[in-house]
Length: 116
Image 1: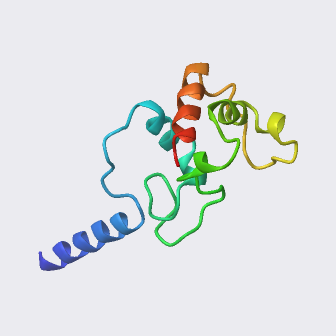
Image 2: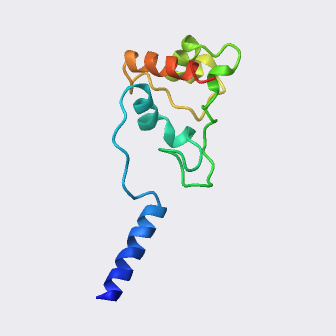
């Protein structure tokens, strides 16, 4: 019986450490859209939706992205819709014009522009 308890605790610890533990309740609005569609590439290691703690992510950090010159809601909306329309060299970022509604794109763009 003790062995089963130890094995059970080990399995829970492994699941928790690998990110398979309990999840937080879903978030709505632009943060929810970010977590669902953006965090897998843009969240830093250990952040919600991001890679395991200590690992890097593929996309740039967006925590202060609105502080860059010229990065306003219009810029972000165009980028989210179709990154290649803003920068033809944008190869890794997918277009979201067919995945998100225009309202979601605008809301997410305004949320990103406010990150200073």
